[in-house]
Image 1 (cartoon, one colour):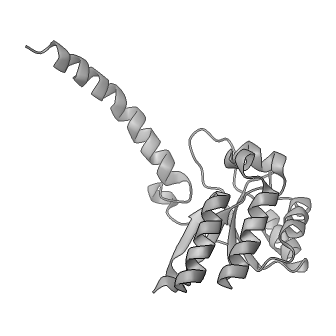
Image 2: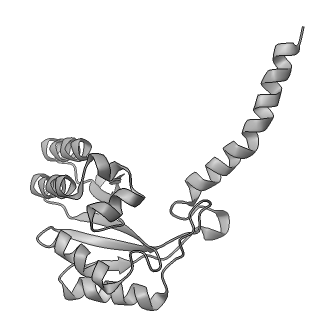
Image 3: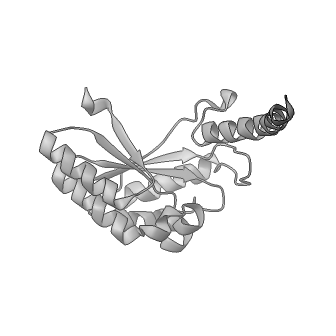
Length: 183
C-alpha cells in the first residue's frame, strides 16, 4: 500500500506543505525523502540551486510541518563526497540542523557521473560520519551502492540520458537539415 511509497524532493517548500496537507486530509501514509547533501546554505546552494529559492530554514520549517501533519518520519538523503561533505564536523553541523526533527539520514556513497569530479567517501569516513550522527541522536544508515554496473545508481540515470541526448542530437540536426532540402 501507500506505506511503501516515498515522495522524494530536492526541497520545494510549497510542495512539501501541500503534500503534508494532502497526507493529513486523506490519511495517507506516504513517506517523504529530502535530498539534502549539505548542512549550510552556502554549501547547499553550491550543489543544489533550489536552495537559493528555498533555504534551509524554510525547508526545515516545512519538514517540521510535514511531521506534525502526518506523524511520519522524514528521510534525508546525503550523497557522501570525499573531502567535501564527509567530515565529522559536517556530521555535527547536520546533527545540529536535524535535532528535534523526527528524521533518519540515508548516507549514499557518491556514484561517478560525467561532469562532476567528486569521489565517493572512503569507508572509514562514512563510518565516522554515521557514528557522529548517531552520537548526536540522529539515526543514520550508509546505503549499499547498487546499479553502478549499468549506470543506474543514484544520479547516474540522468547522466546516462544526457549522454544519449548529446549523442543523438547531432544526428537529428543533420536529418532535419536534410529534410528541409528534400523536394
